[in-house]
Each structure stands twice: as C-alpha cells, then as structure tokens.
Image (tube, rainbow, N blue to C red):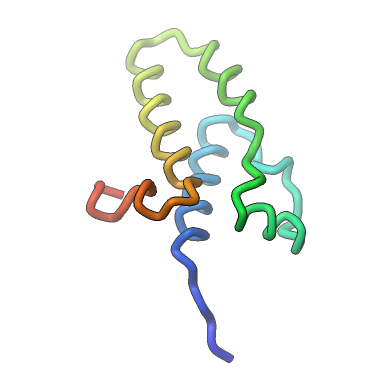
Length: 94
C-alpha cells in the first residue's frame, strides 16, 4: 500500500496545533476525523471557531503577550490557506 502525503494536511495540522495552544480548546470541538469533516477541510469549508480566538485575545493585557498571540495567529491562519503559495514554508522558519 502506498501512502500519499499532502503538504496541505501537514500545514493544516500545524495550524490546528497552534489553535489548541492559543485557545486551550481542541479545534472542531474534539470531533473525530470523519470523512465529511475531512472533505470540508480539503475544500476549505471548515475551520475551527475563530470567534474563540477573539475572546482569548481580548483577555490579553501584556503587549508582549498580544504580539506573540498575533504572530502565532497569523501563522495559524496562513497554514489553513488553500493556496499553497500563501502557506508558510520551512524557509519561513517553521
């Protein structure tokens, strides 16, 4: 059996890990990787609850914490971009 690895999933997974670090919540509400969810991820129709990120950001009081949060949030959202040229690369320091 040959395993085909798509880089989108590697980046999407990294973005999901950043989401969990920033929010302390599992992305997609802890849903199992059903075929329906995977299909929505592939076509870019499903992303974790971004409103939760805004709630977390509002609670930050330190400028340093806010800066770090925004940098990580930017990398996270780029990881989910459907355009491969818009995603971070290993050359970006990932």
